[in-house]
Image (cartoon, rainbow, N blue to C red; front, side, top):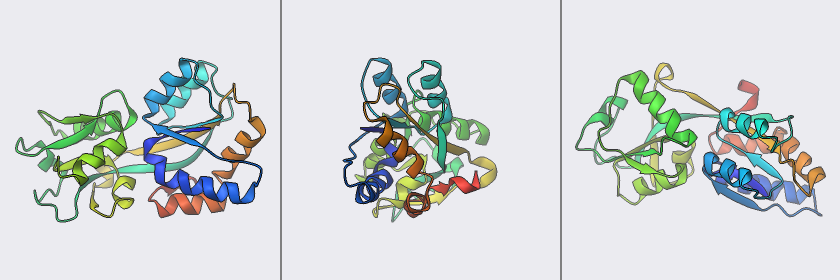
Length: 222
């Protein structure tokens, strides 16, 4: 079982298929959610083989709790974008536009990585959103925009790439952040050999190509 951040859903599903095609005796199963929720599950005694989070801090906390092996790897990175519907009916163009009280803006909850990153970006840009719609993870945030229940989400740029109904408005590099994605073997894994192979596979060219297809920046550029 691979426990992974929700922003990895599409890319990891494809990576799992590729891994299985090269390891006929292995069946890869996934559970996706907010990185903070995954940490809480593991701290509560949940089992698994591999964990992949959307931030280094969560992995460090898992390491401090001796829930993962010390040899974690960084396999990808991500940046943020303003995600809107393709036709962008609210004509949102910049971070400053998110501060318009007439806009319905989605942010991840403050306790999850995508929420921490979004608030950091807003603070740097000196933009205040009075009444944001809070979501539990990245997937939930973009779903609200896709359904027309929100005007925009400040979220990972990869979320726009994987949904044909959405587009991402680029945020200048000087105002953006870079999220690093680490992975590690879970200490109580009952399939440690396969788990180590999967973690290793994430940094191999075939997996890196899939990650790039879904908008992640390769670990080679870290």
